[in-house]
Image 1: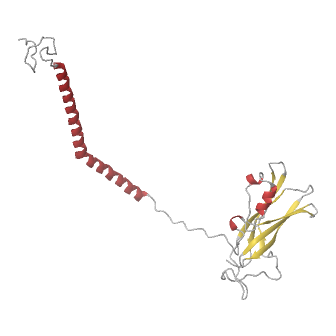
Image 2: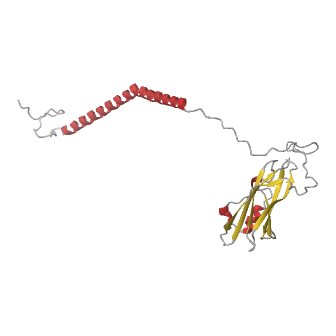
Image 3: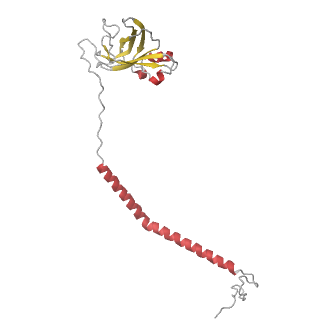
Length: 255
């Protein structure tokens, strides 16, 4: 049995079969249908959100606890398998033992208020300074001038600390005649890449720093060593060899 035209829910007037709008009261049946659909959609979304919140509250804590427990187990296992760290003892300084001072002489173990003096037969303080192996290198300055760089190390063989150690080099011909000389303080070394670019006056000024780089020439203990560098730029044409010696040193007189 076919149903007749729809009846308006507001005024109860039968509408035409194709109409979704009541001509008597102006009620829009289609608008009401759309409103109901929107309400159903909002209800469905609210239901989905509520189910999601309940699921997270019911199962989320246990999942996170399980993940945290597995992570702690892996960390504990890794700590058990990791080999224990070995304590590295600091290496002892490579210093030659100082000779025991005889009665009436100063020792490097004496208090700092002890005044160390240089023996009368060694006024320059050089007799117990030993020179290590020397090496030299010919360089070309950025301005085109040839340079001779000499490097070495001097060791304090006195039984007390020394300071302000000076080194002197001689350039000689094949007959051992001195052609040129240069004096510097120990403890000053310049990198080659700066050596070939700096003006020669600045190079000499840096090598003549009395206390040495970082104050290394302020105190060289008994048995301690000190590096040095000499640089020549006015190389004599007849130069055949060179000689290096300790020129002067002073005893440490206080802290």
